[in-house]
Length: 76
Image (tube, rainbow, N blue to C red):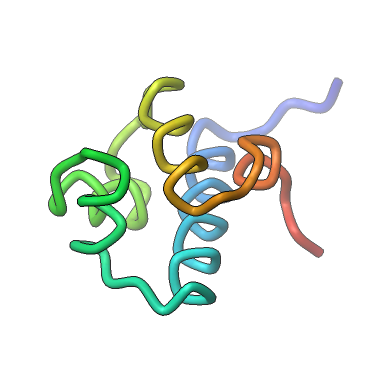
């Protein structure tokens, strides 16, 4: 397994959440409401400032109606 820097996965997840949210025409506030999370938390996750928990990742995936794996995989 290749070694990756610590922020790599945070950046991938942030990019994927933002892309799915925008595709659904949701604001950060609307996504936060659907996921029962705080708007500032969503913003921090999308800027890779927060190490998202698995439970929060699951809530966001449900709110975006996508499998968790879609938020974890790097899109080429």
